[in-house]
Image (cartoon, rainbow, N blue to C red; front, top):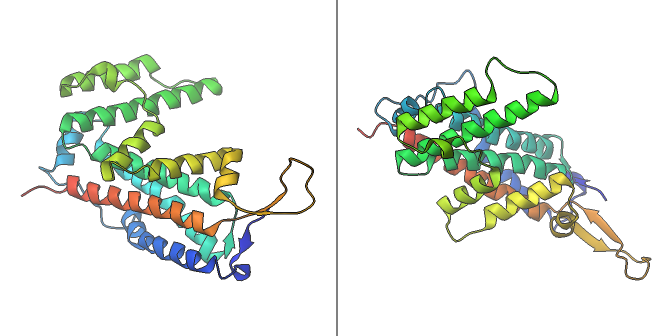
Length: 267
Protein backbone atom coordinates (compact mmCIF):
# COMPACT_ATOMS: atom_id res chain seq x y z
CA UNK A 1 0.00 0.00 0.00
CA UNK A 2 1.34 3.44 -0.83
CA UNK A 3 0.77 6.93 -2.07
CA UNK A 4 3.20 8.47 -4.52
CA UNK A 5 4.96 11.69 -5.36
CA UNK A 6 4.12 13.97 -8.23
CA UNK A 7 7.47 13.21 -9.88
CA UNK A 8 6.63 9.50 -10.12
CA UNK A 9 3.10 10.05 -11.44
CA UNK A 10 2.27 8.25 -14.67
CA UNK A 11 0.64 9.76 -17.74
CA UNK A 12 -2.75 8.34 -16.78
CA UNK A 13 -2.86 10.26 -13.49
CA UNK A 14 -1.22 13.53 -14.53
CA UNK A 15 -4.27 15.08 -16.30
CA UNK A 16 -6.40 14.34 -13.22
CA UNK A 17 -3.75 15.87 -10.97
CA UNK A 18 -3.60 19.02 -13.10
CA UNK A 19 -7.39 19.30 -13.03
CA UNK A 20 -7.31 18.83 -9.25
CA UNK A 21 -4.92 21.74 -8.81
CA UNK A 22 -7.03 23.83 -11.18
CA UNK A 23 -10.10 23.18 -9.03
CA UNK A 24 -8.19 24.40 -6.00
CA UNK A 25 -7.47 27.75 -7.67
CA UNK A 26 -10.84 28.83 -6.27
CA UNK A 27 -9.14 28.93 -2.88
CA UNK A 28 -7.35 32.20 -3.57
CA UNK A 29 -10.50 34.28 -3.41
CA UNK A 30 -11.90 32.40 -0.44
CA UNK A 31 -8.68 32.68 1.55
CA UNK A 32 -8.75 36.42 0.97
CA UNK A 33 -12.26 36.54 2.41
CA UNK A 34 -11.44 34.65 5.60
CA UNK A 35 -8.19 36.54 6.23
CA UNK A 36 -8.54 38.30 9.63
CA UNK A 37 -6.98 41.43 8.10
CA UNK A 38 -9.35 41.52 5.14
CA UNK A 39 -12.34 43.78 4.81
CA UNK A 40 -15.29 42.34 6.70
CA UNK A 41 -18.08 40.82 4.63
CA UNK A 42 -20.64 42.51 6.83
CA UNK A 43 -24.30 41.66 7.00
CA UNK A 44 -26.21 44.63 5.63
CA UNK A 45 -29.17 46.10 7.55
CA UNK A 46 -32.41 45.03 5.97
CA UNK A 47 -30.92 41.83 4.54
CA UNK A 48 -32.37 38.38 5.06
CA UNK A 49 -29.43 37.43 7.29
CA UNK A 50 -29.82 40.56 9.41
CA UNK A 51 -33.42 39.54 10.07
CA UNK A 52 -32.39 35.97 10.87
CA UNK A 53 -29.65 37.15 13.23
CA UNK A 54 -31.98 39.38 15.19
CA UNK A 55 -34.33 36.46 15.83
CA UNK A 56 -31.72 33.83 16.74
CA UNK A 57 -29.37 35.98 18.86
CA UNK A 58 -27.00 34.98 20.45
CA UNK A 59 -26.91 32.08 17.96
CA UNK A 60 -26.58 34.31 14.96
CA UNK A 61 -26.98 32.58 11.64
CA UNK A 62 -24.39 34.72 9.88
CA UNK A 63 -21.72 33.76 12.42
CA UNK A 64 -22.51 30.06 12.07
CA UNK A 65 -22.33 30.27 8.28
CA UNK A 66 -19.05 32.20 8.35
CA UNK A 67 -17.62 29.67 10.78
CA UNK A 68 -18.71 26.77 8.56
CA UNK A 69 -17.30 28.34 5.39
CA UNK A 70 -13.99 29.06 7.11
CA UNK A 71 -13.84 25.41 8.16
CA UNK A 72 -14.64 24.38 4.58
CA UNK A 73 -11.86 26.48 3.07
CA UNK A 74 -9.02 25.62 5.45
CA UNK A 75 -8.89 21.85 4.74
CA UNK A 76 -8.80 22.55 1.01
CA UNK A 77 -5.90 24.92 1.61
CA UNK A 78 -4.10 22.15 3.48
CA UNK A 79 -4.83 19.72 0.64
CA UNK A 80 -3.36 22.13 -1.90
CA UNK A 81 -0.24 22.63 0.21
CA UNK A 82 0.34 18.88 0.32
CA UNK A 83 -0.29 18.36 -3.39
CA UNK A 84 1.30 21.46 -4.89
CA UNK A 85 3.97 22.45 -2.38
CA UNK A 86 4.97 19.12 -0.82
CA UNK A 87 4.41 17.34 -4.16
CA UNK A 88 2.96 14.31 -2.34
CA UNK A 89 -0.19 12.32 -3.06
CA UNK A 90 -1.20 10.35 0.00
CA UNK A 91 -3.47 7.37 -0.39
CA UNK A 92 -6.05 8.00 2.37
CA UNK A 93 -5.36 11.27 4.21
CA UNK A 94 -6.63 13.67 1.49
CA UNK A 95 -10.14 12.24 1.84
CA UNK A 96 -10.28 13.26 5.49
CA UNK A 97 -9.63 16.84 4.33
CA UNK A 98 -12.25 16.61 1.59
CA UNK A 99 -14.73 15.20 4.10
CA UNK A 100 -14.21 18.19 6.40
CA UNK A 101 -14.84 20.55 3.51
CA UNK A 102 -17.97 18.70 2.38
CA UNK A 103 -19.48 18.67 5.87
CA UNK A 104 -18.85 22.34 6.54
CA UNK A 105 -19.83 23.55 3.09
CA UNK A 106 -23.04 21.53 3.34
CA UNK A 107 -23.72 23.04 6.75
CA UNK A 108 -23.49 26.55 5.27
CA UNK A 109 -25.81 25.65 2.40
CA UNK A 110 -28.22 23.85 4.73
CA UNK A 111 -28.44 26.89 7.01
CA UNK A 112 -28.96 29.40 4.21
CA UNK A 113 -30.96 27.65 1.51
CA UNK A 114 -34.58 27.71 2.77
CA UNK A 115 -36.55 30.63 1.35
CA UNK A 116 -38.79 30.69 4.43
CA UNK A 117 -37.26 32.51 7.41
CA UNK A 118 -38.81 30.20 9.99
CA UNK A 119 -37.21 27.23 8.29
CA UNK A 120 -33.83 28.95 8.41
CA UNK A 121 -34.32 29.82 12.07
CA UNK A 122 -35.27 26.26 12.96
CA UNK A 123 -32.16 24.93 11.24
CA UNK A 124 -29.92 27.44 12.99
CA UNK A 125 -31.33 26.50 16.38
CA UNK A 126 -31.00 22.78 15.70
CA UNK A 127 -27.40 23.43 14.68
CA UNK A 128 -26.88 25.27 17.98
CA UNK A 129 -28.51 22.42 19.90
CA UNK A 130 -26.13 19.93 18.30
CA UNK A 131 -23.15 22.05 19.28
CA UNK A 132 -24.43 22.40 22.84
CA UNK A 133 -25.09 18.68 23.23
CA UNK A 134 -21.74 17.69 21.73
CA UNK A 135 -19.90 20.14 23.93
CA UNK A 136 -21.64 18.97 27.10
CA UNK A 137 -20.89 15.34 26.25
CA UNK A 138 -17.21 16.23 25.84
CA UNK A 139 -17.19 17.97 29.22
CA UNK A 140 -18.50 14.82 30.88
CA UNK A 141 -15.54 12.86 29.54
CA UNK A 142 -13.07 15.05 31.40
CA UNK A 143 -15.25 15.57 34.46
CA UNK A 144 -15.85 19.27 34.06
CA UNK A 145 -18.86 21.53 33.65
CA UNK A 146 -19.60 25.02 32.45
CA UNK A 147 -21.43 27.88 34.15
CA UNK A 148 -24.75 26.61 32.78
CA UNK A 149 -26.21 23.13 32.58
CA UNK A 150 -27.30 21.32 29.43
CA UNK A 151 -30.90 21.78 30.58
CA UNK A 152 -30.47 25.54 30.92
CA UNK A 153 -28.71 25.95 27.61
CA UNK A 154 -31.30 23.96 25.66
CA UNK A 155 -33.99 25.86 27.57
CA UNK A 156 -32.58 29.08 26.12
CA UNK A 157 -32.79 27.57 22.62
CA UNK A 158 -36.44 26.67 23.23
CA UNK A 159 -37.24 30.22 24.37
CA UNK A 160 -35.63 31.71 21.27
CA UNK A 161 -37.67 29.29 19.15
CA UNK A 162 -40.91 30.28 20.89
CA UNK A 163 -40.25 33.98 20.29
CA UNK A 164 -39.50 33.27 16.63
CA UNK A 165 -42.66 31.20 16.18
CA UNK A 166 -40.99 27.83 15.55
CA UNK A 167 -41.51 24.55 17.40
CA UNK A 168 -39.32 24.65 20.53
CA UNK A 169 -38.88 20.90 20.86
CA UNK A 170 -37.78 20.54 17.27
CA UNK A 171 -35.40 23.46 17.75
CA UNK A 172 -33.73 21.74 20.71
CA UNK A 173 -33.27 18.47 18.81
CA UNK A 174 -29.76 17.61 17.64
CA UNK A 175 -29.23 17.35 13.88
CA UNK A 176 -26.57 15.11 12.35
CA UNK A 177 -24.39 15.56 9.29
CA UNK A 178 -26.12 12.75 7.43
CA UNK A 179 -29.26 14.86 7.29
CA UNK A 180 -27.35 18.09 6.65
CA UNK A 181 -25.40 16.65 3.71
CA UNK A 182 -28.48 15.06 2.14
CA UNK A 183 -30.56 18.24 2.44
CA UNK A 184 -27.77 20.45 1.08
CA UNK A 185 -27.30 18.10 -1.87
CA UNK A 186 -31.03 18.18 -2.62
CA UNK A 187 -30.92 21.97 -2.49
CA UNK A 188 -28.47 22.26 -5.38
CA UNK A 189 -29.32 19.12 -7.35
CA UNK A 190 -32.50 17.28 -6.25
CA UNK A 191 -31.87 14.17 -8.37
CA UNK A 192 -28.16 13.75 -7.62
CA UNK A 193 -26.68 11.50 -4.95
CA UNK A 194 -23.09 12.44 -5.80
CA UNK A 195 -22.41 14.63 -2.77
CA UNK A 196 -23.87 12.17 -0.22
CA UNK A 197 -21.84 9.40 -1.85
CA UNK A 198 -18.64 11.44 -1.74
CA UNK A 199 -19.30 12.27 1.91
CA UNK A 200 -19.89 8.62 2.80
CA UNK A 201 -16.84 7.50 0.87
CA UNK A 202 -14.62 10.12 2.49
CA UNK A 203 -16.05 9.24 5.91
CA UNK A 204 -15.46 5.55 5.24
CA UNK A 205 -11.83 6.16 4.33
CA UNK A 206 -11.40 8.30 7.44
CA UNK A 207 -12.81 5.42 9.53
CA UNK A 208 -10.70 2.83 7.72
CA UNK A 209 -13.69 1.00 6.23
CA UNK A 210 -12.66 -1.77 3.85
CA UNK A 211 -15.32 -0.99 1.26
CA UNK A 212 -13.74 2.41 0.62
CA UNK A 213 -10.33 0.88 -0.02
CA UNK A 214 -11.94 -1.37 -2.61
CA UNK A 215 -13.96 1.40 -4.26
CA UNK A 216 -11.77 4.52 -3.95
CA UNK A 217 -8.14 3.37 -4.16
CA UNK A 218 -6.19 2.11 -7.17
CA UNK A 219 -5.87 -1.69 -7.10
CA UNK A 220 -3.61 -3.96 -9.14
CA UNK A 221 -3.97 -7.69 -8.57
CA UNK A 222 -0.70 -9.45 -7.79
CA UNK A 223 0.21 -13.11 -8.31
CA UNK A 224 0.91 -15.49 -5.50
CA UNK A 225 -2.31 -15.24 -3.49
CA UNK A 226 -3.76 -18.22 -1.66
CA UNK A 227 -6.96 -19.78 -3.09
CA UNK A 228 -10.02 -17.52 -2.60
CA UNK A 229 -7.81 -14.72 -1.23
CA UNK A 230 -7.07 -11.56 -3.21
CA UNK A 231 -3.60 -10.05 -3.25
CA UNK A 232 -3.40 -6.47 -4.47
CA UNK A 233 -1.09 -3.51 -4.71
CA UNK A 234 -3.05 -0.51 -3.38
CA UNK A 235 -2.06 3.02 -4.39
CA UNK A 236 -3.60 6.47 -4.45
CA UNK A 237 -6.33 6.99 -7.04
CA UNK A 238 -5.83 10.53 -8.35
CA UNK A 239 -8.98 10.48 -10.48
CA UNK A 240 -11.23 9.62 -7.53
CA UNK A 241 -9.57 12.29 -5.41
CA UNK A 242 -10.13 14.83 -8.17
CA UNK A 243 -13.82 13.97 -8.49
CA UNK A 244 -14.31 14.06 -4.71
CA UNK A 245 -12.60 17.44 -4.53
CA UNK A 246 -14.76 18.73 -7.37
CA UNK A 247 -17.93 18.21 -5.37
CA UNK A 248 -16.36 19.69 -2.24
CA UNK A 249 -15.33 22.82 -4.15
CA UNK A 250 -18.74 23.13 -5.83
CA UNK A 251 -20.57 22.94 -2.51
CA UNK A 252 -18.23 25.50 -0.97
CA UNK A 253 -18.77 27.86 -3.89
CA UNK A 254 -22.53 27.47 -3.50
CA UNK A 255 -22.23 28.29 0.19
CA UNK A 256 -20.41 31.54 -0.56
CA UNK A 257 -22.99 32.48 -3.20
CA UNK A 258 -25.85 31.92 -0.78
CA UNK A 259 -24.04 33.84 1.94
CA UNK A 260 -23.65 36.85 -0.36
CA UNK A 261 -27.27 36.60 -1.45
CA UNK A 262 -28.59 36.50 2.11
CA UNK A 263 -26.25 39.13 3.61
CA UNK A 264 -27.08 41.85 1.10
CA UNK A 265 -30.10 44.13 1.43
CA UNK A 266 -32.59 43.84 -1.44
CA UNK A 267 -32.70 47.61 -2.07
